[in-house]
Image 1 (cartoon, helix red, strand yellow):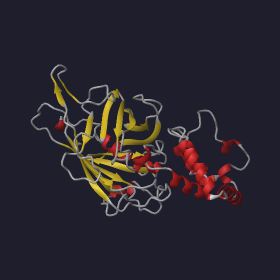
Image 2 (cartoon, rainbow, N blue to C red):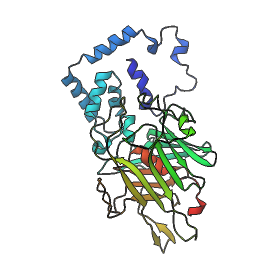
Image 3 (cartoon, helix red, strand yellow):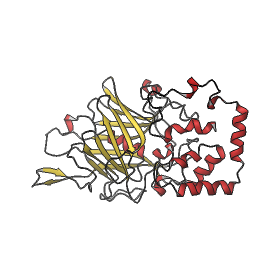
Image 4 (spheres, rainbow, N blue to C red):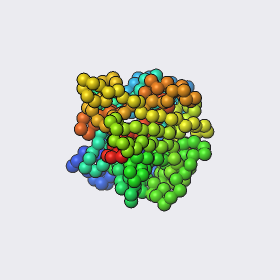
Length: 369
């Protein structure tokens, strides 16, 4: 069961041992579980892989049907960690977020969100170390314990600002091996470029600079070189006249065209087709009685902030996703507490793309307000 132990860190929001409890490998004179002889590991894995394919698929299907939400979906992810045959069965059974509306594997974070209803998440900010944590909402409340998904930290790189996005909050620094992407801004903080550490589509542009070497991806996928592939841009319009109104933002995001079953977490192959999704913030209306700009967040935002926004696709745009009506909100972001924000997204954006777009809203933008 060595494969289970190596892959279980993402299944829990916190994988560290409680304070004061020593690690078993340090206090036990016996052989640690991960140091067991290879022949024993092979026999153990072979025992689990002997199940008939029909029986194995039925087991995984039953586990998947009985686990609608996290933490119950941890059992589904655990099935994929038993051995190769169990992983193949889990991948064939589990549907992607586009169809199921659920996030199961880490690879689901880079797949399109649900089409019928938005996926509810929230972001917690730690101002002391400029760190931002993304959680999946487990209830209908604005915030709860949540399922940890991603984390980002802001760094200064000369005149620019960079956000490193990762699965692991304990390994979050330039040059770490757990990074999944990054976000880079210009000097004024008005233009951002989104990078993926894995090539998501054929023909994706690669960042050619020294800094790209500091974000290797070999630990995530040994088949992909340690490069950064551009997958989107976010820009804020200047407000030189200081006219009354909120920020105005535009996004250009590379999204997949057509998506089938859940991808195998062990095989990160670029998809063949993609198209550019153009988004802009939905224009708010001026409320005479409240004397402020207002948007209908349907109860998901409770605090007025210049960071709040809703993104829609411009009407009349010919897109393959059928969202260009200016009414369907693709991404919604808003403040609910001093350091807590809701993030609701849907198809064709992924959790990774939505999180990166929301990160651009943090920070002062004097030229745009």
